[in-house]
Amino acid sequence: MATVDVEVATVNDVIDAVEALAPAIADRAPAIEAGRRVPADLLDDLVRAGCFRAVRPRSHGGIGADLPGTLRIFETLARADASTAWVVMIGSSSWIDLAGVPRESFDALFAGPDTITAGAFNPTGSIAPAAGGGYQVTGRWSFASGCEHADWIYGNCIEVGGDGSEPRLRIAVFAPDQVVIEDTWTVAGLCGTGSHHFRVEDVFVPANRTVVPLGDEPSFDSPILRVPLVSFIGLAIASVALGTAHGALDDILAIATRKVPLLAPAPLAANPQFELEFATADTEFRAARALLHEVARSAWDMAVAAEPFDTVQRARMRAAAVWVTERAASVVDMAYRAGGGSSLYADCPLQRRLRDVHAITQHFVVKRDTMTTAGAILAGQDVELMVF
Image (cartoon, rainbow, N blue to C red; front, top):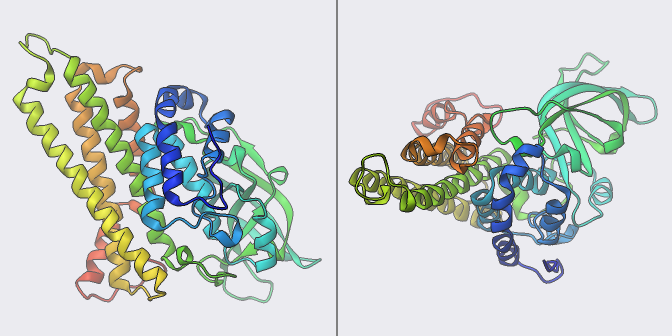
Protein backbone atom coordinates (compact mmCIF):
# COMPACT_ATOMS: atom_id res chain seq x y z
CA MET A 1 0.00 0.00 0.00
CA ALA A 2 1.04 3.61 -0.52
CA THR A 3 2.54 5.56 2.35
CA VAL A 4 0.52 8.47 3.71
CA ASP A 5 2.65 11.60 3.27
CA VAL A 6 2.76 13.18 6.71
CA GLU A 7 3.75 16.55 5.27
CA VAL A 8 0.40 17.04 3.55
CA ALA A 9 -1.85 14.32 4.97
CA THR A 10 -5.07 14.91 6.88
CA VAL A 11 -6.90 12.62 9.23
CA ASN A 12 -9.22 11.70 6.36
CA ASP A 13 -6.23 10.35 4.43
CA VAL A 14 -5.44 8.07 7.36
CA ILE A 15 -9.06 6.95 7.60
CA ASP A 16 -9.07 6.17 3.87
CA ALA A 17 -5.85 4.16 4.24
CA VAL A 18 -7.27 2.26 7.22
CA GLU A 19 -10.48 1.49 5.34
CA ALA A 20 -8.39 0.05 2.51
CA LEU A 21 -6.50 -2.13 4.99
CA ALA A 22 -9.59 -3.27 6.90
CA PRO A 23 -10.59 -6.30 4.76
CA ALA A 24 -7.11 -7.79 5.04
CA ILE A 25 -7.05 -7.12 8.78
CA ALA A 26 -10.42 -8.85 9.19
CA ASP A 27 -9.15 -11.87 7.25
CA ARG A 28 -6.11 -12.05 9.53
CA ALA A 29 -7.98 -11.54 12.80
CA PRO A 30 -7.85 -15.26 13.78
CA ALA A 31 -4.08 -15.32 13.16
CA ILE A 32 -3.61 -12.10 15.12
CA GLU A 33 -5.45 -13.65 18.04
CA ALA A 34 -3.50 -16.92 17.80
CA GLY A 35 -0.17 -15.06 17.59
CA ARG A 36 -1.14 -12.83 20.54
CA ARG A 37 0.26 -9.74 18.82
CA VAL A 38 -0.04 -7.68 15.64
CA PRO A 39 2.31 -9.28 13.06
CA ALA A 40 5.33 -7.26 12.02
CA ASP A 41 4.25 -6.88 8.39
CA LEU A 42 0.80 -5.63 9.40
CA LEU A 43 2.42 -3.23 11.85
CA ASP A 44 4.47 -1.88 8.93
CA ASP A 45 1.26 -1.40 6.95
CA LEU A 46 -0.30 0.51 9.85
CA VAL A 47 2.79 2.71 10.09
CA ARG A 48 2.64 3.46 6.36
CA ALA A 49 -1.07 4.26 6.72
CA GLY A 50 -0.13 7.01 9.17
CA CYS A 51 -1.87 5.40 12.16
CA PHE A 52 0.91 6.13 14.62
CA ARG A 53 1.36 9.71 13.38
CA ALA A 54 -2.30 10.66 13.44
CA VAL A 55 -2.71 11.93 17.00
CA ARG A 56 0.73 13.56 17.25
CA PRO A 57 0.70 17.31 16.53
CA ARG A 58 2.44 18.59 13.42
CA SER A 59 5.04 20.25 15.63
CA HIS A 60 6.36 16.73 16.29
CA GLY A 61 5.99 15.12 12.88
CA GLY A 62 2.36 14.12 13.26
CA ILE A 63 -0.83 14.82 11.41
CA GLY A 64 -2.61 16.60 14.25
CA ALA A 65 -5.86 14.71 13.84
CA ASP A 66 -8.94 16.16 15.50
CA LEU A 67 -10.67 14.13 18.19
CA PRO A 68 -13.65 12.91 16.12
CA GLY A 69 -11.30 11.84 13.32
CA THR A 70 -9.03 10.05 15.77
CA LEU A 71 -11.99 8.08 17.10
CA ARG A 72 -13.02 7.17 13.55
CA ILE A 73 -9.57 5.65 12.96
CA PHE A 74 -9.90 3.46 16.05
CA GLU A 75 -13.50 2.53 15.25
CA THR A 76 -12.71 1.60 11.65
CA LEU A 77 -9.85 -0.65 12.73
CA ALA A 78 -11.97 -2.27 15.46
CA ARG A 79 -14.69 -3.11 12.95
CA ALA A 80 -12.03 -5.31 11.33
CA ASP A 81 -10.26 -6.47 14.50
CA ALA A 82 -10.45 -5.11 18.04
CA SER A 83 -6.91 -6.15 18.98
CA THR A 84 -5.40 -4.25 16.07
CA ALA A 85 -7.45 -1.17 16.95
CA TRP A 86 -6.40 -1.38 20.59
CA VAL A 87 -2.71 -1.59 19.72
CA VAL A 88 -3.01 1.44 17.42
CA MET A 89 -4.99 3.34 20.06
CA ILE A 90 -2.29 2.76 22.68
CA GLY A 91 0.71 3.10 20.39
CA SER A 92 -0.50 6.32 18.76
CA SER A 93 -1.86 8.22 21.75
CA SER A 94 -0.11 7.07 24.93
CA TRP A 95 2.59 9.69 24.30
CA ILE A 96 0.08 12.08 25.88
CA ASP A 97 1.00 10.61 29.27
CA LEU A 98 4.56 11.83 28.65
CA ALA A 99 3.82 15.35 27.41
CA GLY A 100 4.97 16.83 30.71
CA VAL A 101 8.62 15.82 30.36
CA PRO A 102 10.94 18.76 29.54
CA ARG A 103 10.56 19.97 25.96
CA GLU A 104 14.08 18.98 24.88
CA SER A 105 13.54 15.51 26.28
CA PHE A 106 10.16 15.15 24.58
CA ASP A 107 11.66 16.28 21.28
CA ALA A 108 14.37 13.64 21.63
CA LEU A 109 11.96 10.87 22.60
CA PHE A 110 9.70 11.62 19.66
CA ALA A 111 12.21 12.61 17.03
CA GLY A 112 10.78 10.00 14.68
CA PRO A 113 7.28 10.67 13.30
CA ASP A 114 6.24 7.03 13.78
CA THR A 115 7.56 6.57 17.31
CA ILE A 116 5.38 4.04 19.15
CA THR A 117 4.84 4.09 22.91
CA ALA A 118 3.53 1.54 25.38
CA GLY A 119 3.26 1.57 29.12
CA ALA A 120 1.22 1.16 32.26
CA PHE A 121 -0.44 3.79 34.42
CA ASN A 122 -1.06 1.54 37.42
CA PRO A 123 1.72 2.62 39.85
CA THR A 124 3.31 -0.74 40.61
CA GLY A 125 6.91 0.49 40.56
CA SER A 126 9.06 2.32 43.07
CA ILE A 127 11.27 5.26 42.17
CA ALA A 128 13.80 7.13 44.26
CA PRO A 129 16.25 9.98 43.60
CA ALA A 130 19.74 8.80 42.67
CA ALA A 131 23.13 10.36 42.27
CA GLY A 132 23.76 11.88 38.87
CA GLY A 133 20.50 13.77 38.55
CA GLY A 134 18.20 10.90 37.96
CA TYR A 135 16.22 8.11 39.58
CA GLN A 136 16.61 4.43 40.36
CA VAL A 137 13.54 2.44 39.42
CA THR A 138 12.35 -1.05 40.28
CA GLY A 139 8.95 -2.41 39.38
CA ARG A 140 6.70 -4.79 37.53
CA TRP A 141 3.74 -3.63 35.46
CA SER A 142 0.85 -5.37 33.73
CA PHE A 143 -1.32 -4.70 30.67
CA ALA A 144 1.43 -3.09 28.59
CA SER A 145 -0.38 -3.33 25.25
CA GLY A 146 1.96 -3.38 22.26
CA CYS A 147 5.08 -3.47 24.42
CA GLU A 148 6.85 -5.93 22.11
CA HIS A 149 7.10 -3.39 19.30
CA ALA A 150 7.26 -0.11 21.26
CA ASP A 151 10.12 2.36 20.85
CA TRP A 152 9.62 3.61 24.42
CA ILE A 153 7.99 1.89 27.39
CA TYR A 154 6.93 3.71 30.53
CA GLY A 155 5.84 2.67 33.99
CA ASN A 156 4.11 4.65 36.69
CA CYS A 157 5.75 4.53 40.10
CA ILE A 158 5.36 5.62 43.70
CA GLU A 159 8.05 8.13 44.64
CA VAL A 160 8.93 8.45 48.29
CA GLY A 161 11.21 11.37 48.98
CA GLY A 162 14.04 11.06 51.47
CA ASP A 163 12.95 14.38 53.03
CA GLY A 164 9.80 12.85 54.47
CA SER A 165 7.50 14.44 51.88
CA GLU A 166 4.24 12.76 50.92
CA PRO A 167 4.51 9.95 48.35
CA ARG A 168 3.53 10.93 44.82
CA LEU A 169 3.29 9.37 41.40
CA ARG A 170 6.14 9.63 38.90
CA ILE A 171 6.31 8.01 35.46
CA ALA A 172 9.66 6.75 34.22
CA VAL A 173 10.41 6.20 30.54
CA PHE A 174 12.53 3.19 29.57
CA ALA A 175 14.29 2.15 26.41
CA PRO A 176 13.22 -1.36 25.32
CA ASP A 177 16.62 -2.81 26.24
CA GLN A 178 16.12 -1.67 29.84
CA VAL A 179 13.03 -3.78 30.44
CA VAL A 180 12.28 -7.49 30.62
CA ILE A 181 9.02 -8.43 28.94
CA GLU A 182 7.33 -11.40 30.58
CA ASP A 183 5.20 -13.66 28.39
CA THR A 184 1.98 -13.41 30.42
CA TRP A 185 -0.67 -12.43 27.87
CA THR A 186 -2.79 -15.59 27.75
CA VAL A 187 -6.30 -14.23 28.16
CA ALA A 188 -9.93 -14.46 27.07
CA GLY A 189 -10.28 -11.26 25.03
CA LEU A 190 -8.18 -8.75 23.10
CA CYS A 191 -5.78 -11.64 22.74
CA GLY A 192 -3.83 -10.07 19.89
CA THR A 193 -2.71 -6.98 21.80
CA GLY A 194 0.44 -8.47 23.35
CA SER A 195 -0.39 -6.79 26.65
CA HIS A 196 2.32 -8.57 28.62
CA HIS A 197 3.85 -7.72 31.98
CA PHE A 198 7.23 -6.02 31.98
CA ARG A 199 9.70 -5.39 34.76
CA VAL A 200 12.85 -3.45 35.62
CA GLU A 201 15.29 -3.97 38.46
CA ASP A 202 17.25 -1.03 39.84
CA VAL A 203 17.36 0.77 36.49
CA PHE A 204 18.72 4.31 36.27
CA VAL A 205 16.48 6.82 34.46
CA PRO A 206 17.56 10.44 33.88
CA ALA A 207 15.35 13.00 35.58
CA ASN A 208 14.36 14.50 32.23
CA ARG A 209 12.80 11.17 31.23
CA THR A 210 10.37 11.25 34.14
CA VAL A 211 7.10 13.11 34.66
CA VAL A 212 4.56 13.59 37.43
CA PRO A 213 1.31 12.43 35.79
CA LEU A 214 -1.66 14.75 36.06
CA GLY A 215 0.69 17.16 37.82
CA ASP A 216 3.40 18.42 35.48
CA GLU A 217 2.02 20.73 32.82
CA PRO A 218 2.71 19.76 29.18
CA SER A 219 5.95 21.22 27.90
CA PHE A 220 4.24 22.38 24.70
CA ASP A 221 0.71 23.26 23.67
CA SER A 222 -1.67 21.39 21.37
CA PRO A 223 -5.47 21.07 21.30
CA ILE A 224 -5.31 17.33 22.02
CA LEU A 225 -3.43 18.09 25.24
CA ARG A 226 -6.24 20.40 26.38
CA VAL A 227 -8.80 17.57 26.34
CA PRO A 228 -9.01 16.08 29.87
CA LEU A 229 -6.75 13.04 29.74
CA VAL A 230 -9.02 10.49 31.39
CA SER A 231 -11.97 11.65 29.28
CA PHE A 232 -9.89 11.22 26.14
CA ILE A 233 -8.94 7.70 27.17
CA GLY A 234 -12.58 6.84 27.89
CA LEU A 235 -13.78 8.09 24.51
CA ALA A 236 -10.97 6.24 22.74
CA ILE A 237 -11.84 2.99 24.50
CA ALA A 238 -15.52 3.50 23.66
CA SER A 239 -14.63 3.94 19.98
CA VAL A 240 -12.90 0.55 19.94
CA ALA A 241 -15.95 -1.02 21.60
CA LEU A 242 -18.19 0.68 19.05
CA GLY A 243 -16.16 -0.59 16.12
CA THR A 244 -16.31 -4.10 17.59
CA ALA A 245 -20.10 -3.82 17.74
CA HIS A 246 -20.21 -2.63 14.13
CA GLY A 247 -18.22 -5.68 13.10
CA ALA A 248 -20.59 -7.95 15.04
CA LEU A 249 -23.57 -6.49 13.16
CA ASP A 250 -21.75 -7.22 9.90
CA ASP A 251 -21.04 -10.77 11.05
CA ILE A 252 -24.56 -11.67 12.18
CA LEU A 253 -26.11 -10.21 9.04
CA ALA A 254 -23.81 -12.36 6.90
CA ILE A 255 -24.77 -15.43 8.94
CA ALA A 256 -28.50 -14.63 8.95
CA THR A 257 -28.76 -14.34 5.18
CA ARG A 258 -27.39 -17.83 4.60
CA LYS A 259 -28.31 -19.78 7.75
CA VAL A 260 -31.59 -21.70 7.81
CA PRO A 261 -32.32 -22.64 11.45
CA LEU A 262 -33.48 -26.14 12.32
CA LEU A 263 -37.06 -26.76 11.10
CA ALA A 264 -37.34 -23.19 9.80
CA PRO A 265 -38.82 -22.57 6.33
CA ALA A 266 -36.53 -19.65 5.50
CA PRO A 267 -33.18 -18.08 6.43
CA LEU A 268 -32.70 -16.54 9.84
CA ALA A 269 -32.93 -13.09 8.25
CA ALA A 270 -36.61 -13.75 7.52
CA ASN A 271 -37.42 -14.58 11.15
CA PRO A 272 -39.55 -11.80 12.74
CA GLN A 273 -37.87 -12.19 16.13
CA PHE A 274 -34.45 -11.82 14.54
CA GLU A 275 -35.62 -8.80 12.59
CA LEU A 276 -36.91 -7.13 15.78
CA GLU A 277 -33.67 -7.79 17.65
CA PHE A 278 -31.48 -6.76 14.72
CA ALA A 279 -33.32 -3.46 14.27
CA THR A 280 -33.08 -2.78 18.00
CA ALA A 281 -29.36 -3.51 18.04
CA ASP A 282 -28.74 -1.44 14.93
CA THR A 283 -30.58 1.49 16.51
CA GLU A 284 -28.61 1.11 19.75
CA PHE A 285 -25.40 1.14 17.76
CA ARG A 286 -26.32 4.26 15.79
CA ALA A 287 -27.49 6.09 18.92
CA ALA A 288 -24.26 5.25 20.72
CA ARG A 289 -22.21 6.34 17.74
CA ALA A 290 -24.11 9.62 17.48
CA LEU A 291 -23.50 10.38 21.15
CA LEU A 292 -19.81 9.50 20.97
CA HIS A 293 -19.19 11.81 18.06
CA GLU A 294 -21.35 14.62 19.43
CA VAL A 295 -19.35 14.56 22.67
CA ALA A 296 -16.06 14.32 20.76
CA ARG A 297 -16.93 17.24 18.49
CA SER A 298 -17.99 19.42 21.39
CA ALA A 299 -14.83 18.55 23.34
CA TRP A 300 -12.64 19.27 20.34
CA ASP A 301 -14.28 22.63 19.70
CA MET A 302 -13.61 23.58 23.32
CA ALA A 303 -10.02 22.37 23.12
CA VAL A 304 -9.32 24.34 19.95
CA ALA A 305 -10.81 27.45 21.57
CA ALA A 306 -8.78 26.77 24.75
CA GLU A 307 -11.95 26.82 26.83
CA PRO A 308 -11.66 25.17 30.26
CA PHE A 309 -13.55 21.96 30.98
CA ASP A 310 -15.57 22.14 34.18
CA THR A 311 -16.54 19.12 36.28
CA VAL A 312 -20.01 18.86 34.71
CA GLN A 313 -18.53 18.65 31.21
CA ARG A 314 -16.00 16.07 32.37
CA ALA A 315 -18.76 14.05 34.05
CA ARG A 316 -20.79 13.99 30.84
CA MET A 317 -17.76 12.91 28.81
CA ARG A 318 -16.95 10.12 31.24
CA ALA A 319 -20.58 8.99 31.43
CA ALA A 320 -20.85 8.97 27.65
CA ALA A 321 -17.79 6.74 27.35
CA VAL A 322 -19.24 4.23 29.81
CA TRP A 323 -22.69 4.27 28.19
CA VAL A 324 -21.35 3.87 24.67
CA THR A 325 -19.13 0.98 25.75
CA GLU A 326 -22.06 -0.74 27.46
CA ARG A 327 -24.33 -0.26 24.44
CA ALA A 328 -21.62 -1.70 22.21
CA ALA A 329 -21.38 -4.77 24.44
CA SER A 330 -25.17 -5.13 24.31
CA VAL A 331 -25.10 -5.08 20.51
CA VAL A 332 -22.41 -7.77 20.39
CA ASP A 333 -24.38 -9.87 22.90
CA MET A 334 -27.43 -9.70 20.65
CA ALA A 335 -25.44 -10.71 17.58
CA TYR A 336 -23.80 -13.62 19.40
CA ARG A 337 -27.13 -14.92 20.73
CA ALA A 338 -28.79 -14.60 17.33
CA GLY A 339 -26.08 -16.71 15.77
CA GLY A 340 -27.17 -19.70 17.84
CA GLY A 341 -24.94 -22.72 17.62
CA SER A 342 -22.97 -21.14 14.77
CA SER A 343 -21.54 -18.56 17.19
CA LEU A 344 -19.79 -21.27 19.22
CA TYR A 345 -17.31 -22.33 16.59
CA ALA A 346 -13.76 -21.02 16.66
CA ASP A 347 -14.00 -20.00 13.00
CA CYS A 348 -17.01 -17.78 13.71
CA PRO A 349 -15.91 -14.19 14.35
CA LEU A 350 -18.82 -13.58 16.72
CA GLN A 351 -17.22 -15.58 19.53
CA ARG A 352 -14.10 -13.41 19.23
CA ARG A 353 -16.18 -10.21 19.08
CA LEU A 354 -17.96 -11.28 22.27
CA ARG A 355 -14.73 -11.94 24.15
CA ASP A 356 -13.10 -8.77 22.84
CA VAL A 357 -15.91 -6.38 23.74
CA HIS A 358 -16.24 -7.80 27.24
CA ALA A 359 -12.50 -7.47 27.71
CA ILE A 360 -12.91 -3.80 26.78
CA THR A 361 -15.66 -3.31 29.38
CA GLN A 362 -13.21 -4.45 32.08
CA HIS A 363 -11.00 -1.38 31.68
CA PHE A 364 -11.09 0.79 34.80
CA VAL A 365 -11.78 3.99 32.84
CA VAL A 366 -15.14 2.63 31.62
CA LYS A 367 -16.11 0.72 34.75
CA ARG A 368 -19.76 0.90 35.74
CA ASP A 369 -19.34 2.87 38.97
CA THR A 370 -18.01 5.80 36.94
CA MET A 371 -21.71 6.53 36.39
CA THR A 372 -22.21 6.96 40.14
CA THR A 373 -19.52 9.62 40.35
CA ALA A 374 -20.79 11.33 37.19
CA GLY A 375 -24.34 11.26 38.52
CA ALA A 376 -23.29 12.80 41.82
CA ILE A 377 -21.56 15.64 39.97
CA LEU A 378 -24.55 16.21 37.69
CA ALA A 379 -26.86 16.19 40.73
CA GLY A 380 -24.81 18.94 42.35
CA GLN A 381 -23.39 16.82 45.15
CA ASP A 382 -20.01 17.38 46.73
CA VAL A 383 -17.64 14.77 45.35
CA GLU A 384 -14.00 14.32 46.31
CA LEU A 385 -12.09 13.84 43.09
CA MET A 386 -8.45 13.05 42.57
CA VAL A 387 -8.99 13.01 38.82
CA PHE A 388 -12.08 12.77 36.68
